[in-house]
Amino acid sequence: MSRSESIPAVQLRTRMVVRHRTQRVVGWLLAPFWFPLATLYLRLRFGCRIEGIAESRRIYKKIRGGSSAPLLICANHLTLVDSFFIAQALSSNWGFLADFDGVPWNTPEEVNFAATPWNRALVYVAKCIPIRRGGQREDIRAV
Image (cartoon, rainbow, N blue to C red; front, side, top):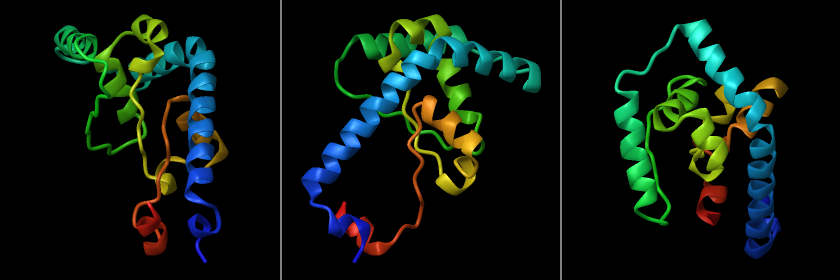
């Protein structure tokens, strides 16, 4: 019997909602510390600057301000830092601190991005929900 079959769907959903709300609050509380550190790391480690950043932030702000509907951003993540690059292109650290809901959720592959306790902590505060690609068929059917 799969894990999802042993717990009723309503309980699974409730647990998931509570976990994600908790994760969001923890990320928000730690954001004043990890936002600047992530930005500094990207600039010092990779020497990164995002071309067209003002325009991408203006467009993102316009889209988010024009609707209360959820927004799905589909990006092909190749590395752990891609999520940070995408977030930096969408808003400033101050903008995300003022509107933490604007920080995009990400779904990195668990094996690659949450393999160590340190990486799990990083993806947790960065609003990432690690997933296992190619999971058990019965678990996929349960969803």
